[in-house]
Image 1 (cartoon, rainbow, N blue to C red):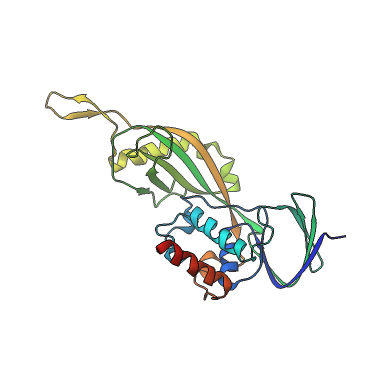
Image 2: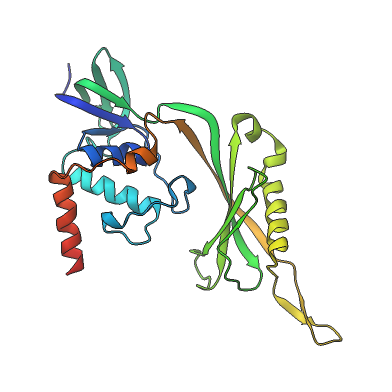
Length: 265
């Protein structure tokens, strides 16, 4: 017997920001299953303007947090942070909460986002900048290779590190099989990133001067921090298409307008 039974004409289930944004655009009730929040340098959502959310130069994670807040406050995001498991039974979605409550949601139409993996992954290798000079470069791109295709530099958020220091992340797009290959391990991502840094002309710190009075530089030193692997899903509808959908200006939109008005005064 269910602890709670609900019915909706239309229901979204998914893991990523695409599902959240679709629910925001259409005001369709939403359940997040094993959610995968983006992080601030997630390239899947780069190039989109989210100023309409009241966020200037927003990171994907800030967009995620804003959408979760708005959808939760309007009752569209169901049982946020409280889903332990689920299964489908006929035209019902059976949810188990973190407190062992059984919820049954029936629906006329179910939109399933982020359910099938493509077998490919966005791979982010984060490195700490240990030795090197200051520079104003934000991105280096290798158009010929999907392994460390892009290096992004960003202000370090490490403790006791000056605001002028830029850490870096190498971004790859790799298949399941490639992830098992040692040639794309962090050992080799470090080597390739150092090669790209050298080619870009970024120097290490000054260690002295030669006989002609020209500075001599140390080689830059970077230290591996972590690897983040984000699976790529076959989209029910692409993020781009959801982003470009017409906005339904109901309660959730009006809530956003009030929030923006309040923060701007």
